[in-house]
Image (cartoon, rainbow, N blue to C red):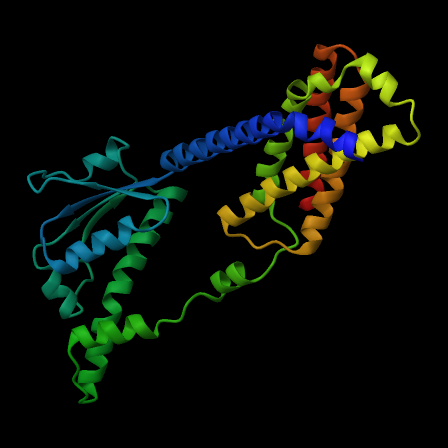
Length: 306
């Protein structure tokens, strides 16, 4: 096996490095595109803070920390806060009154916040986000009022601290973090992209396609099996390593069953690439067929992992 390892791995080490760099660049491009898309899909909410109290700042922070929400500040001099909605600059615009902290402490927030919004699906989502944020901020004060009625007075700071410490974490989040999944559509889509990019190995390893030396090498018994096997196993392990890195970066534990299915698909993929590399003479034909083969296997990979 030493001649095959020497030919396929040691003399081609730079090509493997270039392949990893190209895959890394492609994944970085995909990540940048996803970031730009998530920015474009944010729900804009315009807020005019007339209170400038700690409670109003906490409310604004709670809303802005919500995923897929961007907060736009409205100047205190603006009289018509609904202009942001009319100009389609925001899905909802709201005004926090000057006495917001006092009303919050007295549980008198009903009809105190001036709010304008679009009457559509996204507008309703934005309204639910604001309502939930207000409710979260009211809970400690509701608890304090209940304790006062039962003659168990506690300071609002202690109630907030106890509420924060005793709020249970989401079981869905716990399951997502600690359980290994047999399926992952997000990782499958990303790795399908990796498979299509990996077709570039046809170009990177074109020096392996030298008919005269290959003809002499393939005269020995089982030489074709050893050559193909070395190439396929090396690239399969390389792509599995890339998959493990993707899984680690995305914090999505995957089961051995997922990796077993992936190994089988990658092995078949690399068998096709190796066949094209060593059998098809024209580079342009090899590259075209490799791209088509990569697309077919990528679709198959997504279908199997769904």
